[in-house]
Length: 309
Ligand SMILES: Nc1ncnc2c1ncn2[C@@H]1O[C@H](COP(=O)(O)OP(=O)(O)OP(=O)(O)O)[C@@H](O)[C@H]1O
Ligand SMILES: [Mg+2]
Image (cartoon, rainbow, N blue to C red; front, side, top):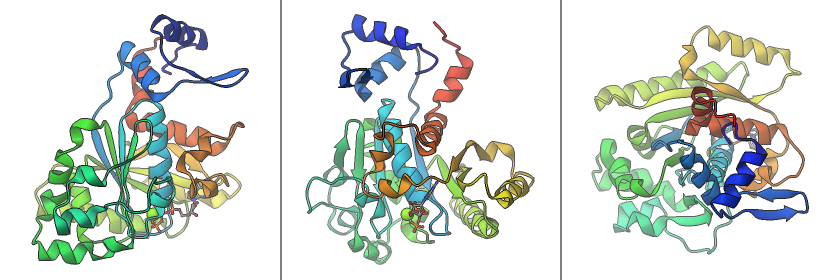
């Protein structure tokens, strides 16, 4: 927590009578609300941002990273909403949804359902707008409703934006109207990239699509950030592909974290937060923690305010 020592945190918990939860005789966890109070007290500001996790190539880790980073951001007291725009609903399946019948984005488009009715709380500070196969008609419905792609997602999110610090949109591996609209609404597009020989093809297509959308709607945003996922230090070509990209993309567009290959993500399909529940330290835990800290601006804040007390 921003360079605070465990003793300093313990003191703050006591002084401010903040809640903490004993999970074993020697281990306590601090719930998001208490973390938020501590960080705000130390001067940290939660910045508002909408991020689209997008990449035309499938299987690169859009869903894995968006769900785990959202879960981790919420642990840091960041009020987070995650939106599943993939009709496969993989992201939705990674959270335990309380009931079987729920409203999704197509209900907003088709039946004018209030966006608030589609939001489900899954854990403290973490909400989701789920998806399922019914969203497969989204593009057609959006055409019927002659929806304005530029403002569609943005206008709907305007109704809830005050309730969140971070809104993350998990896009499908396709160019379609709803992901174009998600891009228009975003401050940044996060592009997961795997260090393999085909990485560049998917990246070039995705970047061209973002460029095309920005140009045709005359938008200033979104910016984009690339994040390396599925890095395996034992495969020497991986490092070569990364080096190759680094020579072609400006460094400010590359997130300063690398997500290593780790088997614990498989379990995240059943429960996105599960990678943090294991008691032992894993690469996944460490990497997603770093990625979440980068995204919410915690690393930068710590760097700028060394608050070692
Ligand atoms: N760092 C990682 N280490 C190990 N496995 C990973 C890692 N990242 C993702 N995976 C696995 O790769 C597979 C594809 O990941 P994911 O579904 O997140 O990709 P995606 O980009 O959302 O795919 P799609 O384009 O189909 O939506 C999943 O089985 C996931 O568990
Ligand atoms: Mg996905």
